[in-house]
Image (cartoon, rainbow, N blue to C red; front, side, top):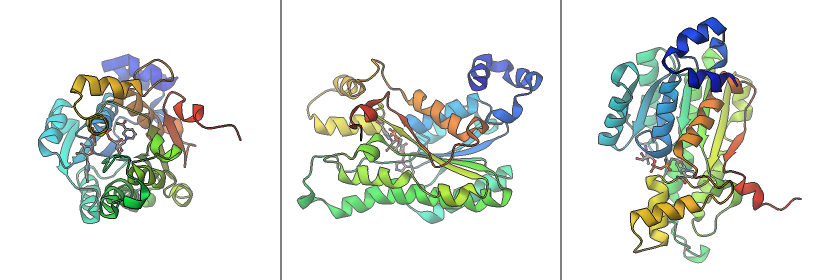
Length: 286
Ligand code: NAD
């Protein structure tokens, strides 16, 4: 409720927050968030949502031109900056966390969101390419875990911080064909919440269904060769059959900001499905 009111207040939000005394219940406007995969799709939308709520963001990605453009669009150095790092390289993840602390004195939110689809053809297990599997795991699972590890390194001494990882409905339901992707996303969900909760640091995940981002569009384009971008987009959007609405990156972004904020101060170890009920509709009652 407070978050909603906060968002609608727009440019006067800080003053009105102070007057209403809600400062503790939001993503504080001095928060510093690192967003991996922030140059595109869900990460980019989340960067905008954080900045709209008054936080500063460090966008971390491997697409330099896009990442810099997003940082500039967000308002430049006062709101956002871009740093290149590959989440598959632990040393780079550690360096990005250190950069955040060096420049801003602390890290409040770590959004481990960078991901790749890998081979998403309906490959039978017998011919699964294990080298490709390793690459998907290195980015999606190991990369997220490296983010959790190094964010915790600087958050635990302060006994404060929120870590959110992007999982997927593919990790909840299992997916035939994209075996590596489904496994990598299942691995992300429970990372470290039990251990870190006692130190005041929460770890949660969001699991979106199909959002028409480059990752999803590339995946679907490979499933339906010869279809143009508009048709591919319609197929991705049509995968959200539940509530008759298109799932947008902004819907996921708002869920991430909720999990990161003090509104969710007792939410830990949770995997928040952003799927319009798709997963539950496919799961029989036990
Ligand atoms: P996207 O392609 O728009 O964004 C992914 C970003 O991650 C890109 O900017 C890419 O450059 C970056 N990235 C990839 N590998 C990286 C690496 N090694 N180091 C740093 N950055 C790297 O796709 P998206 O859909 O926004 O994906 C974001 C996350 O959401 C991913 O983890 C994806 O698996 C997950 N997800 C997406 C969907 C969907 O339907 N789009 C559904 C469920 C989960």
